[in-house]
Length: 263
Image 1 (tube, rainbow, N blue to C red):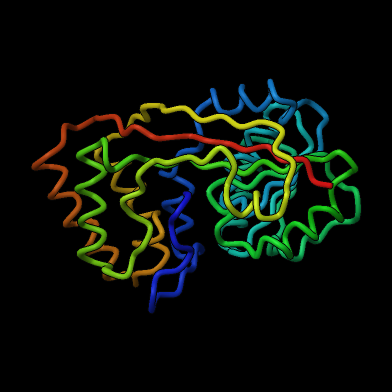
Image 2: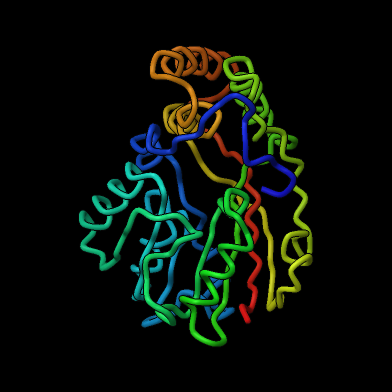
């Protein structure tokens, strides 16, 4: 998300801690996101795609379903374990490796496109771009994207964020205003060639149980708090939802993508 810090002061972030909830309850972008990317030439059959900070492989597995040739990397071994398991359960042909975006473990010119969903803020942009220039073919592209709820337009999301802050005041990932720049500042500063961009809003349906799981999987809860505090947060969240939300509801998310030529 734009304008959100990549650190929570005094907290270490370990996404492996939340891989179970991430795999079960964190949804990927809706199908419209992938249709728009395909219309712009990303996610085509036979295309070689590298998904950076793949997590449990939400993007990578969808690209594999579209018959792209996919690899995903992530620094969190628990996330990669989950990605491998989920891909195997579907019989998908996707390769997953534990590695940072700044040290991609593949040969030069191995990929036609790279994707980075909800994660570019965690990277060293110069080192990552240097690696992408090495592993992408000439004319290859980078897609940076986000899939973020909008707390300023949804009372349930806002109340859930307030509860996260009660348990973890150091969390800096909340209250995103929804602003999507035409060109992100980090890309403009490096003179990247913007090929295309889009954004749209979509209502994402949750049950109280799945929204609890989604919030446990967020950075401010499952990736930073210890197990006992996560359980305390979840109990308080269950009580909050029982008092203020219906059994099923929609949370509006903003989805955006920028496609850059890497030269």
